[in-house]
Image (cartoon, rainbow over all chains, first blue to last red):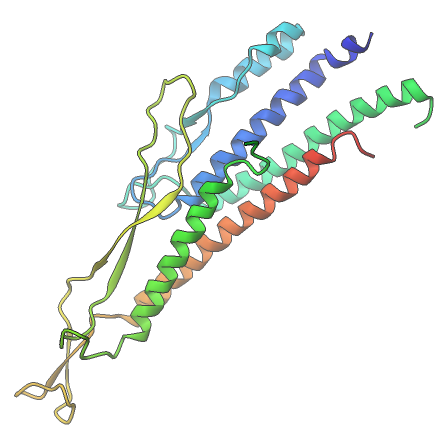
Length: 126
Length: 142
């Protein structure tokens, strides 16, 4: 019975998204760290992860989520802003940093909500 | 070792590198009027260059790796010194010209602003990572 609660697609998706958010934070941190490094190419989550997560959510099968693993990749769409070939934009990275933070808040609250529902079911108290 | 603040070592490396850059800029500004250094010549502007370890190639099992920057070298700006007519100056040549350091104070100020903004951006990452770690630790609490 408890497995059924922890195997809900929403709960599993929230867990995987939290993994992705932590990795993304590392990528944004590295991009901002290399703001002034000549020739640095910005990294971000590999776009394949988003697609696979959507597919796993659509299939609603817990097994589909287990194989999901977010990875980082060099962003091929980012263009260099100056002559030094660096593709990091300070403003864009700050936006992504804040967006990532909000996604993290959302996902932690979702997981907390699920756990609290379970606790309520056990104890009868909210 | 577990990583509570993911990727924080890159940010630390960047804070170190930006601090070095700010130190060099302040050295340049401080020596903007130094006409005679230890070698008897006017002070030459210093330039900081950053480098990062080679980014790992795409398509590998782990994907791209993140790397932090480091100071590659502090080189001298080879632009010629600025000649100023000041016959009464101790270091003036026979024509009354003094070789002043090749420092443009506006250029240094612009560099300083860029360096401190980059420093602030990295501090924002630290703050943000910390807030995220606190949220993660609060999972399951009311």
